[in-house]
Length: 483
Image (cartoon, rainbow, N blue to C red; front, side, top):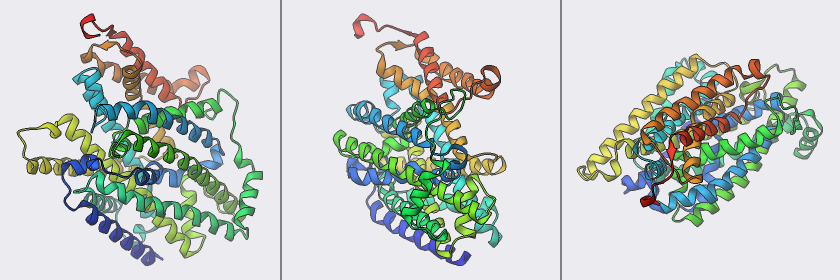
């Protein structure tokens, strides 16, 4: 079994490098950062599915069904509302200013300290979030494949990061647009095939499986208890603002959209992508319900993030194991390659001003970019190993908790810039953007004890609101000569 999985992985990786070779020829720094503004919108939309889902969705959403039923669909509906805001409010601003790094908007609107603060929070958020997405995939591969070969976890991490580094080194966003398309195809194929194989293992047709799940307790969507984390309005509001923050205010996701030739193409991409993502998440929840039914029927005592890999690799056919592993790897690469590229872009442009350095030759800019790219890969290695030594809960919960704390200041900054015309005392912005997350972290840790209230995704909204109000305190009306 391990040899079959190994050779499937090798063939898949070779296919990725073939696409890299074809797309990275004659690539330059503009190809890396913006794809020369020539990316077809439909290709971007399709590839973004894989980048948005990642290994965390692939593993944790099915495992979440036992705990949260189908309440996650309300969060996904919130995502859809958030994508509308991104498409018709945020993206027109980015295109109007012709941005490569979206955090340049904050400098235009407020000043240098705001720009650096916004970019810093993206670097922090994306480093922690992307590392977590990679970790959940690598740990499964380690437990079910590499451990049997005696390969230590640390070496597995270095191996995967080295591969990702190699195929993003030259082409950047231009390459990622096309590799994400391949990876999305494999991930969705794996999702459908695994659902079919679970149905077959239970001697059901696909239609029978859908019907059985529909009649089960797993399909509960609405929770009305306001003290619960799963209250319906918390899910919708949280999903909407998580989407706005983790997509609309995120350099990785927006970098792909900004590689389209114009705003109309980017908007078509966003709407198409958001509708497709709704149905894909529904299929992941259906798969989770099917897996729990199968585990109950077979007496398999496994839950959470371990549910999918345990059943696919140990209890279904060898084909199911191979399909699962390829799907999982397909979930790993989009979340890693895009993160590395966007982090390199944000740091190079926002902190090194590489795009406008007149004293640097193109060759020197490329060399500096390569160094930054490699340094972020090393940082990923360190953070993933940290997660390995401190894993203790559903990783998708951890991911959204990180987002709620680290994306809040970005939400507040952009909201204040777009919704008001006031000026801020720029040098105080970093202080406000530090205080708001600290307050939210403290509340999240103690709210159940203090107020009999559990925060879920809506913590992000509170974080953004506190940042917004803090900026209001340090702001003033525009002077007459600037109006």
